[in-house]
Image (cartoon, rainbow, N blue to C red; front, side, top):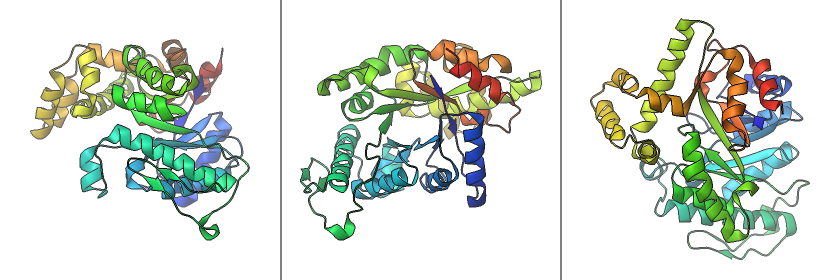
Length: 339
């Protein structure tokens, strides 16, 4: 199992330094994410500053960009990094796609499946000068000339990951992706009972299985060297889980664990502005399923014990960053890499 980390948005002058630190620490991949900043710009700085570590997006919003613009950006980063890019895509939700990005969201699973196929068709033209002839239900690639074709690169096979929570998006990932981004709001039983079977169902449509996909997840962890640190981290984790649980997208996970009404209660608290009550209202049983709770020195071992054979790579969720009292990164990496 590989151990990755998230790379937060930093000033341009700091990105290269942080990337070198991540590489020197022994991590396998540094992932950026699309929130307040574009996820691709930091990866260019990271690629220039490092030689070994993989770089990737977890995630870039697919529908915010055309397939051609996505294909072109990924092609450049793959060339700049000498083949170390992992392109992680996600659909976001309808409100953001339509009202923030001014884009279309209908049939998101079918749409992103078509999107990924179109991106790959564009890459085929870049690498092999194939005549553009992709005509999908949502996206089309029918024209190019040499002025717009960047031409072949040494490492043309760019792995595409797709993010999802519910079975339909998992099946879509199985159909077209090389990997799958599990949301941090997950449990092992949900992965084994819902996510992995759906991935396998989709993969079998193209003669593959779930074992052919690389599955990655950020993981919530509650730990600390003192009771105060543990309490502070638990508060942060509860707040984040409650925020996710208040949206309908994660209802399937709550229902899976027997908390069908919890999402509505959390949503009501959010609408009432009772944010502090949201985290405290979460059942301890749900926290134990979603988060790892242990002393700092046991984090790596517990991650490996929980996810061995379920995930191929893990990272700690952002609440577990290097500035929140956790300093045993060497122990963590060693424990994860130990077999």
